[in-house]
Image 1: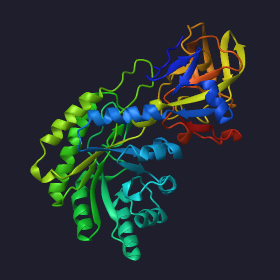
Image 2: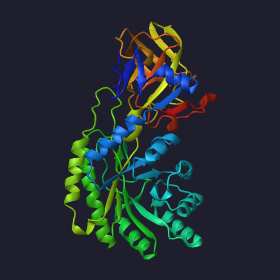
Image 3: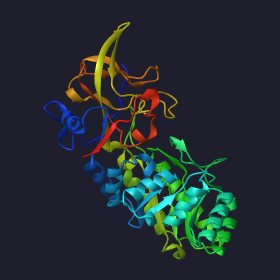
Image 4: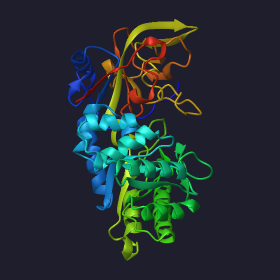
Length: 408
């Protein structure tokens, strides 16, 4: 029997069923009109933001990485909770605008921005995080044509990465950002061209659970930003410190010590030279804000035995939960937190694999986990589904279509 990942705090049982925000899973499915269904808890998102505000230094703002969950009701909720939004495409710019978010709160990173995307961001008043000198040239030319001084920051490719991160975004040759040694010259050129200078974006990695590693990376990031601003001879109005805060997905994972991260960052910022007293800092978080607040509900449509193994076949699968299936960058497949929502908290009765409805052996949401007996009609819950679920999965694969989504 293979262990399942840890179920996040904040979920209860009502009459033996999983309850989200005080409502049973079956009631939520009925409200939504069926399964598969992503449910996001507004209360859990608010609680996470509150915990972050309490732990981080007051001068550090919170940005939401839209790619983690661009569901419009989530964006609208975040608009009242965070200080900014980080996007990575013109499509995401349109999403935040449709949600009524002020583009002045938006920063746009990512390699390969098309001219139309640059123009849309400049026109809207969003900040562009430049990924190359060529992108800088195009942004300057578009700004000159429009008669608008573009709001520009430089995304820096640091010479370090985040130790233990699930996805390294810095150190060595990368498609992201401009190598640190080339940044001062470009910063001088941008400021000299009269742009609305917005500072640096330095993102070294993501999904780390080691507080000491995150603290070390943040200290290195602040030091690099200070050094580059000094070498360029320009002010540092803002520095996006990136993210990296991870959540427990797998057996043995422990929650991040947020207090330790905040205390260490506070010491680093307190030691800054006086000329950086007005510099605004922010962290860019996606999964840490919304990941544990989401649950994917899918219904068992068949129970079958094959060579003595139990397979619970559900009406969802990797087309909605690619990460849970182990096909979103995982090297060794491990089980997410998964439960029989219709018998939440019941004793383990059998070893079973939860598999999806797609005609591929890759479609497996839990492998040989320990569950109470699952029957046709029961609901299965996949936790940690609030980030990189619906928006990061091939919903149209085999014509299955997207899942329902709701914020409660």
